[in-house]
Image (cartoon, rainbow, N blue to C red; front, side, top):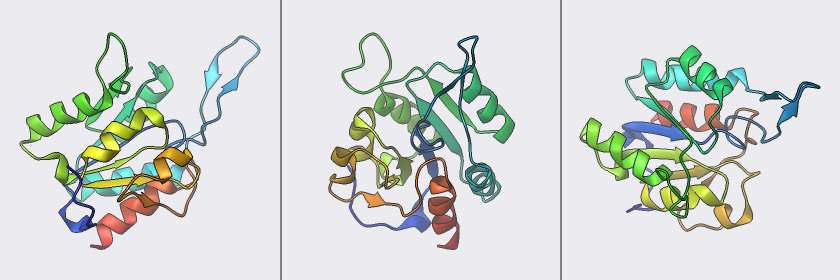
Amino acid sequence: MASGVYQLSAVKLFLTDVDGCLTDGALYYTPEGEAMKRFCVYDGMGLVRLREAGIPCGILTSEKSSIVKARAEKLHVEYLYLGVGSKEFKGGLSKLEAAKRICAKMKISLDDVCYVGDDLNDIDLLQAVGYPCCPPNARVEVRALPNIRVLHTPGGQGAIREIADAILRK
């Protein structure tokens, strides 16, 4: 369970949601109906720098998106879970269960995890990790969670880079 004390130097795994965290939460559609997402290069560099410092990174999203898969591959993200939801997610793996699987594989605790989430389906995982964070554009229910660190930078505009830099400074 989350300790409520931010000891960012102890982070052993960095996980993030996509829409509203790695993106601004907007979906762009072409006339052919294809969805597009906008990613911030600063966030990508944040993930790269964490990996280079020996902190594995992962993306957990309820979307089953080839766009997210391509972005994760480009950044060489170690863990990618597409189509995961909250505890109410029917017929699939929750984000919390996905994070537990990663932690078991790495032989670490959820207390060692920094997770950035912004919406209702992130709450279970945010309440379970040692270092819960959200961008300022997160849902009010997320921003109101005890012990959450509300970042200064909006999702899709460098929020991931902000927390990555804070972790690396410790």
